[in-house]
Amino acid sequence: MSTPKARDSSPGLPFANAKERKEVQSLIRRKVFERMERAKALREFSQISEYRFWQEEFADGFVCSYGERQILQVYRLEDGGIGINISEEISELPEEIVTILFKSGALIKAASDSFAEIYYRVNGFLPAGEDIQNVTTIEKKS
Image (cartoon, rainbow, N blue to C red; front, side, top):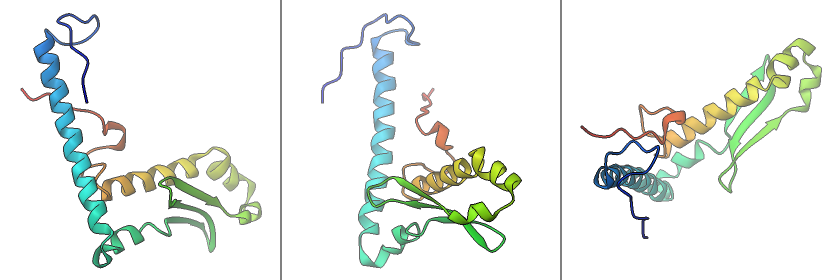
């Protein structure tokens, strides 16, 4: 894989020279490589029958209930996406609850974001201590 040549002065970039830019690029590549290798190792081990429980934890996903009614389920799709099932029983809930939880999108967003964050963290894509919004943030070493 070839990388484009860095110029000494690129307008708008926070680098004094091409060497400094290449150092930051190298640091980013190393961090991404380490993250991907950890995730790859976790995936390989989770395919071994002894450790299959790792992925099975996410098969049923999260379920949100209101009283005794299961109203929402968020789960991992086999093709790698996130699926959301909304129960038809929501029509039996009070209108203000439906508005707050569904029409505003608050419950769906909260459930899918939480599931995604936990799933990515457990599978090594999002290391402990990192927020899902900051997964691509790289700090330059002094």
